[in-house]
Length: 210
Image 1 (cartoon, one colour):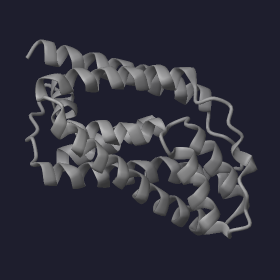
Image 2 (cartoon, one colour):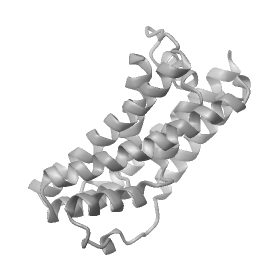
Image 3 (cartoon, rainbow, N blue to C red):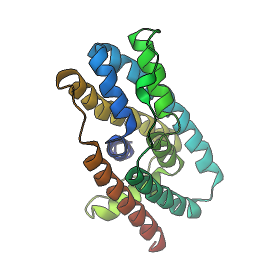
């Protein structure tokens, strides 16, 4: 469980760097108390990634294992390209605030993150946790992780996604609350995009080389 948890946490943190939801979080943190924003984000993250991990587990049971690694690798490359191209110009500052700070944060973050790359990321890992573990085992030659059971993998991916999101967006909350400025979004976006493309290539090559 530990290996899947660590891998999921690391990948989700990377996926969230420079994401549009971090800009939203910065805006919310400048308007509301840190505790209120964090509580709203936590509720949204728990709900979103429970849905995505459950969906990924179902998909993983339907697709043959020999195909999953290639699908996973292709999706990681897709994440990289998606990240490098950017998320678009949605206006996140138009979110209504009449529901109160916690509920406003929950609704705004839920809608901004729904179908976003971090949610699809956790879904992908849940569909085939072994592919992510094998890729990391290839990059770090001295590490040979033990593949978990389906139940253990489910909770490991879910908890890893929650922790990863809270680390990344918690940092954005801190920046928004104490500095009132944006993270270097363009630089972080480029770095995370390139890493995802490389990770996808490694995943596919690992499957090809057995």
